[in-house]
Image 1 (spheres, rainbow, N blue to C red):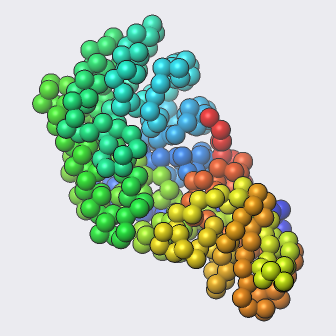
Image 2 (image 1 turned 60 degrees about the vertical axis):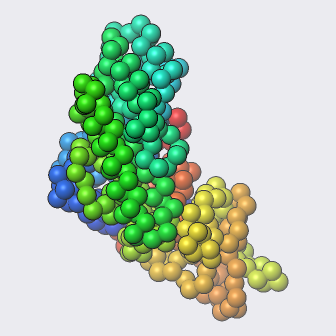
Length: 372
């Protein structure tokens, strides 16, 4: 099938770009002697996971237990669930482990670990302690007292084992420039390595020292002390990464195919059938490129159409301001465009599958898992 025959809106994944992106990260991690545990919260697809883990251990990271179950069904067994765990989810975790998952859980909370220690179970929960490296979303401080209290509670329990520490430099997405990303990458490394040192000094095991975001994985200058990295969006990349200089436009593997459904000449815009649900309302690139709005409008080859961006969205409408009357002739009602999204993870979450393309031809359809 040709791409322009696909019903819209539709999620489009360029296989050749995807393969190039995953190969580049694989090579980078191998060159630095760091294990790659790709985060699959972006792709949520077994086909993508197989490409991303090729030549590595097959270890993966997920953001939901639904993802963990899906990937386990697809043959992936070494799974880190990288969201703070709560005891109410223990039955789901136990069921996954009973099916063969080597599931690693994450915590930054002493109350949680104390409650976990009281669970009557015939299995052992493998735990990582989350460290705050400056993102301030979650995690304990590397030099804070909570670290040793949590770690010792895990280590001393009968139903948990201490695997180590992990962190995520989510604030790297807001760095003003490449130098800023590199500085955050070093802060990320130092925080988690320091936490590991404290555990070892206290006589506690710490085999895993895990870090990772796409910007820091791609731009870090030192990986000393780290055992693994967990980047995710690097497989697809997006306008947020592009606007911060993390990648080039030719590295964008994901887009949304949309139809022109209207010309509103008196208001000066065209309408697309890709609105807030199809594109998301993420405006991550706007911090650097405010004109981007909700996405760049491109032709079917992903060549940006100069000056055309999705400036407004409602649920099913994308509004693209037009300053040149010739655009109405260039993009007649019924024609199709591709929109480069701000945040690949959020955009992809609206769709059940990918239309996988090579050039203008759809060569496959890959499923993905959604929900929790």
